[in-house]
Image 1 (cartoon, chains in turn blue, purple, orange, brown):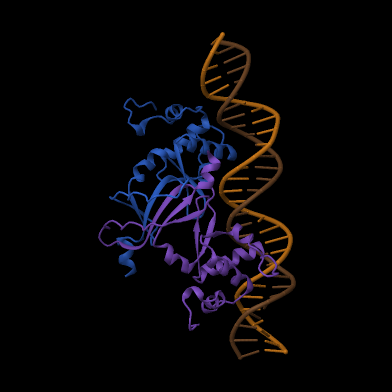
Image 2 (cartoon, rainbow over the protein chains, first blue to last red; image 1 turned 135 degrees about the vertical axis):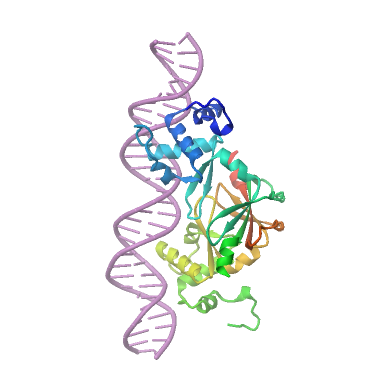
Length: 150
Length: 150
DNA sequence: CCACTAATGCAACAGTGTTGCATTTGCCGG
DNA sequence: CCGGCAAATGCAACACTGTTGCATTAGTGG
């Protein structure tokens, strides 16, 4: 498992967790591994159904919630809400690439396309408001769906 | 339905409902009135706590869900998910005005705030893509939740 | 005014997320 | 290597959001 050549992608989840300054536990390692291996954000239900590693017992439902919260709290994971109102989690590294550009969401096929454009600077906020994230989403039909619809 | 003096804003909710081709019931009128009077999208919980009109009994929880679904189905209301994963509803007409400005979504209380700023012009799209909607969302903590968190 | 259908109210349920508490385990200092 | 403390876990129970089934009520068209 220990790769000699270590890009950020190859860094072990356990090392990331240790570097984040929290305890390295089996649950956290397994969950972060799963998040980093996933191509899409995962819901709690999807993670609960994960194949129980090598002879390991499945993770408790509540523990999974707390593991996810702790990963979010230490910056290793991100939490978002899907269209059905369910929380989905992703490894922090995956998101960093998507934070800096605009997305086009196709209302036909549900696909997400990344546009090569930076989101504009946010406007001034009212007193006391704290900005955490900026999202500039365009919705419409992608080339494929547009051709079908016309 | 054409009232002589009638801007769209002044049209009675009952007439809108009738025009949509569904039965005009007390529940639907009250809910649509509330949605049209609200400055922000309302959650189910917020509407359930509405002051029970003039001596009217409070609306049943399940009925409220069904009323909301029916208003969405006939195009009079819009359904969206807030940052906490709770559905929020707004009158359809209100959306036209909201399309033209930026929203701040509080990750603490799920509230939606309208900022007095126009969304920036969308970037150039790839060939064949058709733009239908632009959404410029800021996320973070509102003044109230920020004060609690600090 | 009648009848027919849609809408309502009630009860019970399902899914998602949270809290309290006793027990286990990672980690640190000796 | 070992003991101890704080953090993490597992379990049970709970709260909130949303849904389904079914009997009853109330709009609407004739």
